[in-house]
Amino acid sequence: MKLCSYRGCTKIIQDGVKYCDYHRKKFDISEKERYKVYSKKRMQDAEQKKYQSFYNSDDWKRIRDAIIANCFSIDIIEFFRTGNLVPGFTVHHIIPIEDDWNSRFDTENLIYISESNHQRIHVEYLKGQREKEQMQKILFDLKQKWNDAFVI
Image 1 (cartoon, rainbow, N blue to C red):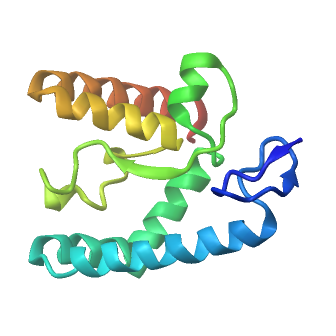
Image 2 (spheres, helix red, strand yellow):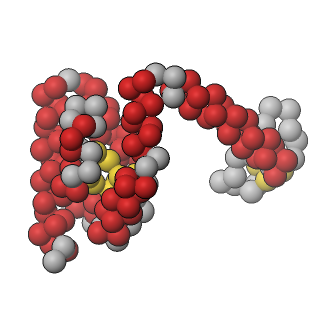
Image 3 (cartoon, rainbow, N blue to C red):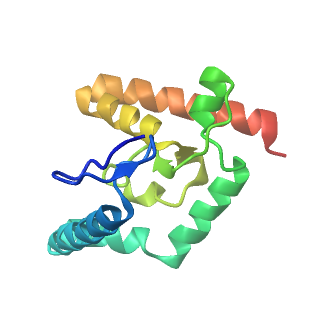
């Protein structure tokens, strides 16, 4: 048991829970509003609008769902790294759509991963071109290893 994490709240809640019911609802509303402002700002940039329109398209949703089903909804990286079955969170473009718009629907360029691995990948991408290319090679190799083992 612990105190609600909302500043000044004295309600006691279960461990592993951040806010009491009242402040969780309040937090969720503020997060939705914050995201709405963020999303609106992104849609004002023509290039970002193009990317967001793509991610909201029915074609992308169909491809994304097929990729998730193809890997049984687990993080491929975590499976080969640790042997654990960790739920995935996002379908990642190994070669970002900003770098190659034409590969946005290429299933060989898509890999399903957890949020933590997604963050790790982008940290590597930001280090420099050499690190980005090394990470991309690792991801393509893991994707091929998965396909060889599990895809008919």
